[in-house]
Image 1: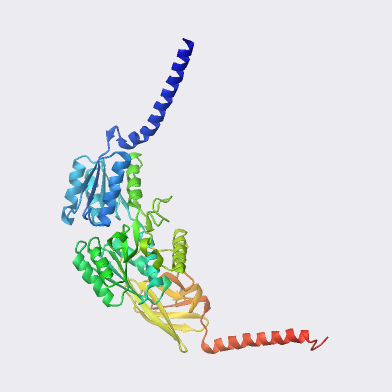
Image 2 (image 1 turned 90 degrees about the vertical axis):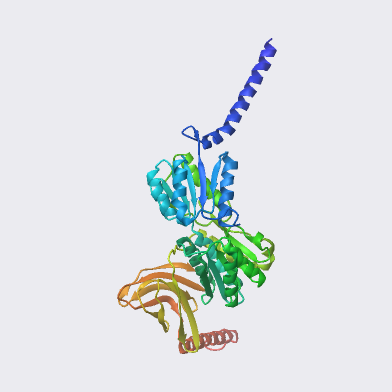
Length: 480
């Protein structure tokens, strides 16, 4: 009897342990599924198509993962016309949805408007620039990923021209292409970057036409952010045997011998983070701006990364891969800053001559241009502009290095070094109203030819004297 009771006790203990273990496994799922004791209602709504192989498809896959991971039922609505956005949000809010993921920049203002009428519904706009008590936005620093695409293109271009095609001039898309241009010009300051906006995200024929036009203008790398219109851009690159860059998803499957890589948004991670804010009752109505990460699912808040080269891996030289890795880490470590630029900027450039040597300085501005650039040998470079405003300049280190002071007349102008490489530095400053020029000084500024000759002759003379002294010592010449 004691033996039986002992065995029964052991069985009971094991059963209890199994039950506790089961509860430990099930409990997180139950907690994740519960909000105030009811099943959480989630909706994903977008003006894109879930079949677009990019923006819409990535969101659909991320929402499906929430269903698989946590057991939720997610409602889906795609291809919503822009005029119907507010009505769509309002309907889901009326139907008692706890979380609405509104996928697209255009959903921002309607989300804030509807959110005021339905305070118990949480809305997350991806990618948005709005917020209120129950509305948050995720505005990823996509420009950090596209900066790397621009740098990669600049390292591999044979024509010296890169191109991009956008569906429309939304702030997030402008931001993407400005990062692309910054990366390209960091590597090759005199590179040409041409762009086109279609005003249409779902017209592959229109995208192909734009891509072919850019190739005819010398581009050998095409980059799109244009949903299914972008498929046409990739097709143009494939037909003309140039490279393309994909967007949002790894788009190599669209043209494995053409799409070198893509910038990718880790939407699985972003949507999960948005969900957890609601589940854990920690929702914050603010704009979140996650940046780059080394790869999908990496630790930290980053949700932007580059896809692998896949079957084109052998086409990328080892030194290019090494430099790309170095630049990636520099962006992660904030040694290179890729700032947000959500307004269209103008490319600016100028040449500065010193003797027979010509130097090219490039940059962007808020609409102005450089009238002239003059090298004050060994001291500074002076730039004349046609108007005041925000200015960024990429200055080759062969011209000026170790930038120390920017002055507008007698006034010192604050500047920020955005990025620096072995070949160039990019600085940002504001040319004050009433000023038309700045003078930039550095630790070293290229000297004029005569000065260079004097330096070289002096170095040679020092070398000769050194050799004579050395040999004289060996031959016991001169004083004992």
